Image 1 (cartoon, rainbow over the protein chains, first blue to last red):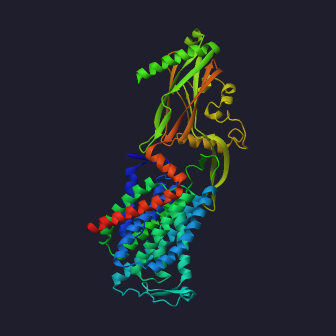
Image 2 (image 1 turned 90 degrees about the horizontal axis):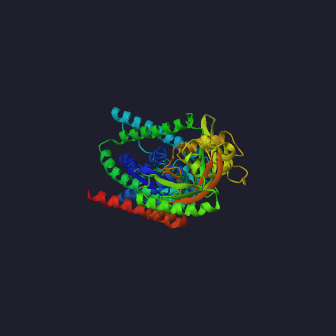
Image 3 (image 1 turned 180 degrees about the horizontal axis):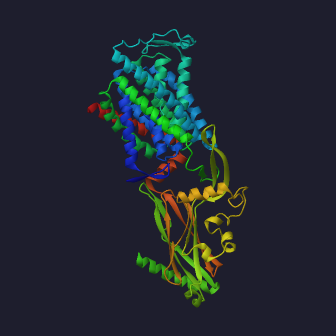
Amino acid sequence: MSIYLPIAEMSVNIFILFGMGAAVGFLSGMFGVGGGFLMTPLLIFYNIPPAVAVATEANQIVASSFSGALAHFRKGTVDVKLGVMLLIGGLIGSTLGVYIFSSLRSAGQLDLIISLLYVVFLGAIGTLMTIESLNAIRKSKNNDAPVKRKTGHDSWIHKLPFKVRFRKSKLYLSVIPVLVLGMLVGVLAAIMGVGGGFIMVPAMIYLLRVPTNVVIGTSLFQIIFVTGYTTIIQSTTNQTVDVVLALILMVGGVIGAQFGAAAGHKLKGEQLRALLGLLVLGVCIRLGYDLVATPTDLFNVIGYMDGGGH
Amino acid sequence: MRQFFSMLIITLISTLLMAAASKAESLQMGISVDQVPVSSSFNGAEIVIFGSIETTEQAALFRGEYDVVIRVEGAPEDVVIRKKDRIGGIWINNESEKYEAVPSFYSILSARPLNLISNSIELAPNGLGLNNLGKNVPVEGEKTLIMNPGEFSDALLRLRIEQDLFSEIPGTLQQLSPSLFRAKLSLPANVPIGEHKVTAYLFRNGEMLNTNESSFVIEKVGFERWIYNLAHEHSLIYGIMAVLMAIFTGWAANAMFRKS
């Protein structure tokens, strides 16, 4: 059954999109990630214009992160103070990101930059994750004790000024790295159409030394606001949020996530991380291949209906 | 429908008889719809353009000396064509050219190939045929298609043909009788929204005699129209609505999670 998307202005198969939403939702439920980094490339492979894919995906992530954050609120694993600090940086970053997005779009380099950012970030994170989890699997086989997390007051990040106490995270930390991290993820969220959890979570664990139990909830908490804000800014600046597309993906996503979460409980943490790492690397290689392989058509054409350009 | 057509043809013929007095040879035309609605189930459409050749020279009409060519054009737009080049191992959009006033949709309907109907001296100034596209538009901008022929304008034509937005297909017009004709226009799912101009040209032995113009509009209706207008005219409200929809969906999903 085909459905006409009013903003993307194209006819698409509703079942394929629903299936994509469900499949990515399954993976995000299983691995506890937002899934934006998988969904946006998938939409682009499906010929949704990248500008629409990115902006619409931000809208979808609001739904999945809100759903996830509610569960964490109930368990009490959200550091609201830390989340708000990250959020302040995130809003600045997102504004900047949407501005960069608009200017890249009019320069005709948006698709390239989106692909490049994906290849770089997915490549780096996929590699780290795979190596780390393979080591963990090897260690658990050798019955070694897991490496203890450093309590960490030794790194340069913890020597910066403007320190604030984050009670829930049991941290006494400068606001500078928190704001900078929030901003960086905000920029990426706007340009790449992701929540940024896949960068935020490792950065919170390894750079800020936030305890693992509050990391996901706090990250989800701030992602709701950053992606919500990005959705509104994309709507007013670029008019590229397609709510019909977003709704199909959301419904598929939340249903898939239920089954994914159940499947996730049957696998060990390090096995999950290894699988996710390989998946991330797979998407990275696919996107990277498209950048270096000779395109089937060297030309592309863009029309501006209003005659004025953007 | 048949009755409607015959009624219309009778009306056409009577108007033609009146028109014929003023001009020796002319052309009447009607379109099956004024408006093509684009709703959520829109997946392209087919419309019919019909009409008649009016002439005092019945003998020539019966000898088949007349030809009708119909040009359908969407609103003109500026287009940018970009060419990828390999830079540092990756393919990057590099050179580009901009063309002004290129029709967003272009279709030529005729019974026979255009080169059998007339020659380029008659066809070109009327912008008939893909190779004459845009030549009927007065040159105002610095770059129209005719002024910069080359690989970029070739690529533009090729891409638009691949997207089903440009076409020139002989046999899309049928001569029902020596004077009556009917043409079928296929609109693809990606047809641009807006007004489309329909111009019919009457040829006799290759010479262009007369034209007639009409138009139809392709527009979003109902929910699609509402969404599109909201997104463009009240984009802030649209954005807030999108976020609220997402929060509601997330909340609903969470509520269902807890029950199960």
